[in-house]
Length: 434
Image (tube, rainbow, N blue to C red; front, side):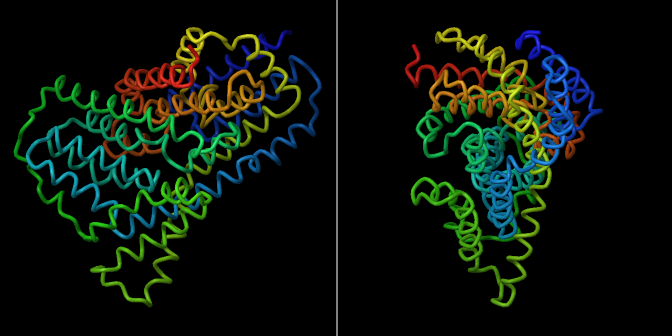
């Protein structure tokens, strides 16, 4: 059977797994591992040449494939926890909301922008805390649970493509770094933010929410632990250390954590003898905060290891070689359609799922420059961070408001498509593919 036919069978099996994840009967964590085993089995049955040793190699070596990214995420979690435990996250979000006063639209926009700012450095841990702080405020403004969830979950993730630890992971298969991608990301980010603002305005109009209203729960804006104003710059520290001082991502997170504790010392009442215990809690709890994402990464490691078997690599490579477009219009149409249908539920277009293997194969073919593939990953990353209902903070937000992740998905899907397609069109213009 031809490589393309074999690849089609793999896609068909993926769709079955998607249905199981859509019905919430199969967790994404197990779906990735199951897909890696099934990928090897499908190719083996249809192409031949697999032995029990291949499955043993898959199980034994899969987790090691993402070891550098796992360590990066661990220390990113430590940095995030330093922002949370020192009160920086609370100060940024609540002070921003307070500026909006009795204007619900302005409060909502400021909450979202503040949350996106916090997550630049505090990543998933910061996103979870922002949700805990912001969602009660949004609900008190009169937003329905589904509207508040859609707006705030989109908000905390819409700057995700700027997260340093994302590019530490993408570099493992795309061979591009944050420094190399930064010029394109700076151009693309305003379009993503504008899409989120458009969604907020649309939701206010459709739900007929007032633009001015007396906020019923002023106490929600109260900051429990005030920190110096200059401490509010701490979420930017990893970006500064990586982009300006050219430090490694892990070193940036470690140093940023130390700086966050030091600059929040004034007014905190902390004694010098409390520092060892504080750093220990930040270290342990920060790693614990990343447990879900690390579990996802391990599953991705199995997927990428499965794609590295010669017989699987041959199928992926030959299949992609026959369908990847060369013209700019073909590029936009193909990758837009592929994103809409397969950048979900950890599928073949999802950089945080099977897509890691697919993008790795695209890089291996050398059909497009590395920076073009990196920009394409950024567009797909933005889409899945907002639109994929298996994303960690989306699941968490839905749990907080008791909203179905499928209802969330239906509400946000069109907006996710818009920002993803914008990214694909923009990269073809930016990289002169016309």
